[in-house]
Image 1: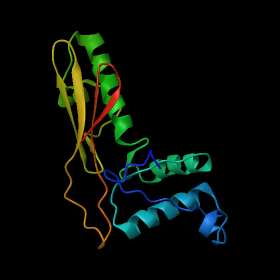
Image 2: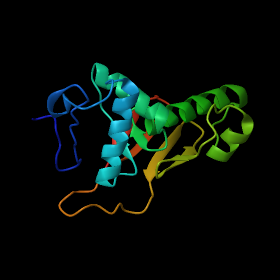
Image 3: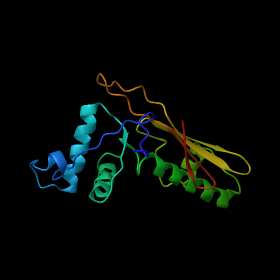
Amino acid sequence: MRWIDAGSFTYVLMDQRGYGDSRTADGACTVEEIAADAIVLADSLGWENFSVVGHSMGGKVAQRLVADAPERVTALAGVKNDLISIAQAERLYYVQNNSYADLPTLASSGTMNITRTSRGGYTYMAESSGTGFTVTATYVAPPLQMPNGVAPPHFPTYSVDQTMEIHQGD
């Protein structure tokens, strides 16, 4: 498939309960069960953190995964949403103070609606200038130990600035 970048990412396509090779799996095939299955799969692969893509019922499962294991899901409603929240805090801080601020100042000012400065191996940093800001999420956790023949997941760097667009590096 031309949209899959196997050189930069490791992909796992899970057959959800009731579909494909999991068509005969026991259980009620609820969103909660399927999300739990995804966690078991990630654990079996040795993945402490991972990104999730879901379509149709898989989209509901992906949202459930974020609700059940927010510290493990780095993309979907994880790291990227944290960056947007921090960027919104920067914009609010600017309106109130006519300047942008670093992360500790944002956290202590009450403008941020999140309290975390990291998630799932990513650490956040906010840099400001007189005309703008950049919030960056960098993966800093130790490398994952993978089973033989399984490539470790790729953890790109994400950033957002005053345009509110998320950018992905490396």
